[in-house]
Image 1 (spheres, helix red, strand yellow):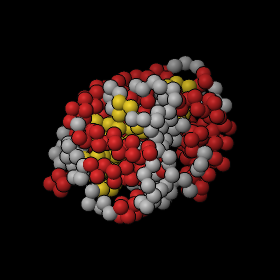
Image 2: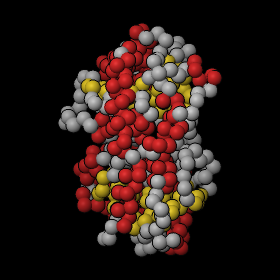
Image 3: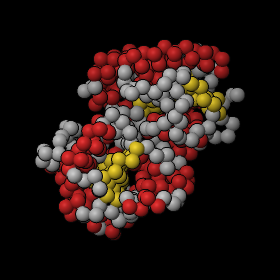
Image 4: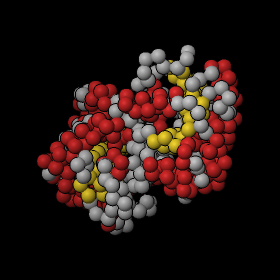
Length: 401
């Protein structure tokens, strides 16, 4: 088919990049089709349109394992060469670093090579696999792509400044959402057992992989201060990941098991967000957080920390310096980003954790503020409708040269 693309990523299970695949493929214009190459097709959670190709490599305990990544790279290179040569796609679009490298290495003889950048790369230098493997590969290969799609200007500028990438290669396309699909899921009724946890007056909800970048432990610590002011408050954390044991231990040490619930991953997340008082994103690092956009589309008030990219674009907050106090915008509330130190329950709260708690308390206690933030956020979310953004993807694919 003339208008056919290939999308390459690790999975379609959890995460913002994976949700991007879902949003792109389900919103392609008439006459366009997508093939999707995954490491494994065993745990697909997000809806998609297109044909799945799988490397048939089982999910490891850690995706950062060098052995796992090496195996994926070899099989991916072989499969990509075959698919590109056979199907002559308009473009091969890759998401996340290992897929980007394989996409570039298999060349643009048969199709355009488009890679994506979804985080401030330089902020991952504390992770050894990034510092010693990913960073050198980015510097070596990324300038050989036909086009680099960055989710915001901060991500683009970070790659130019720290990795020597050429500015003319970049196009900014924000992460998007399917508002109608979100509203449809949000209208699903809660189960009987859910009512103990979810309320439009007292429930705080957050969502994302249980990893360092998401900072959920800071929210748990801040929540202990929230409980002093709002004793019947509830905190529900959606996600899976390597920090789950640490987060559960923190909850036990604080003795707040009856008030905090780690619910895992749920494909119907939007119905829970829509039945909560406030969505909080306490991240250390993000790209263009889909979970925040979805929460806003659900009509739920949002609080987000001032990490280096994504939050300010969504909240339309232009200040140059990092904030040191709680800031209210037309679309929600921004608080200073926390330290990122994995603290224990015995340690006193950081000042920025206290500010995060104070912002949550304001939202829970002030119905008018809650409704103002919810209405503003919902209005803002319409600027990120996927159908508009897919038109930008199509323009990049069809552009000559």
